[in-house]
Length: 467
Figure 1: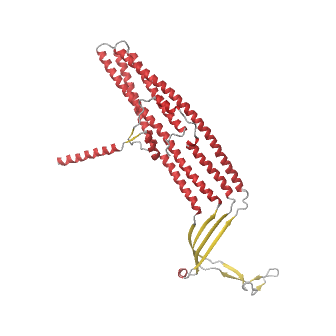
Figure 2: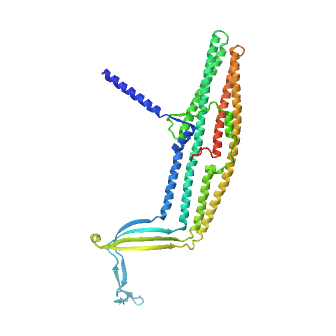
């Protein structure tokens, strides 16, 4: 019995370890580029835009199907509950009436008539028909519009990917900066703990007062509290990043890119040269050009409707009619066939097309105005992004210098305190200044990273050339 219990617990332990191994294998690692590539495949907004593109493709095939033969087969069975009668003169077809009666001196004479049933109780027919469009001036234009619609739907997918790339990049940088703040806070806590222990030892030996120990304990508690807040912020930024990537919030991921030891000179060189604005690099501008083309086709289509349309059709079928339903299915059916050629020539429509054309022309003009407005908007975005990133770079350089100075002041102050020529208050003030400089530095670093994303988006380079 003990052997069986041991075997059971051993099996459970192996199952648990296997489960942990499987869970560990699901953890994924992403660089920034990999995270963007993953998001452009899995993000729900991108998937929705792909469905729109698929729907547009189906619409294109629907338009093309208009020129294909339209084939239909139908049948009908009719029961004439009351057969309609035709009224004929009593004398026959065109003959004189057999008799007449007078109903009064001033009453008109009424001829006797004969009512003849015209039909049978049951009628049925089966027919197949084929309709073919031979000529329609607007059809070829519709094919061109369909091709442009396909381009527009693909551009909309790309626009969705670019928006996702922007969101993922900003969330990714948020996580990196928050993690670096965690590391620096851990270092500060370790340093304060060391100083706290040293000060406690000095207090026991009578070299420093108890109040100095208390001040350091307050400083250590504040650092640990701040560290917990930043840790919570890191968790939140991870949730946001996984949401933008299309992952579940419980999925485990690791970021492989790092931002420690940032070279400000290299960052400055990366944004020093900005090429002239190329509007075609902006997906919004490219999509608007497709919309302009579609508006032009829409306007041309009104004019094409003045051309004649030519259609051909053919029908072949059988019909039968009997008073008895059983005879209806056992007797001979009679065939029939017809071929039609139809030409539709529009002559006058009450000036409807004329006013429709006016509306389409106004819509076309509005889209062109939108293109001019977008150009101006892109120019403004580029100027704003360039100024913002230059300001961010200058602030980052200043805060990096302040951080170096604060670290040096803290180093010197700690040495003076250990040698007995400095006070505990000076150390605490230097610690506070150092933490403030660290906070300002990381805030300015994040601002620069976000400004870089905005500049790349304004220049049409955010999606790294992937379409």
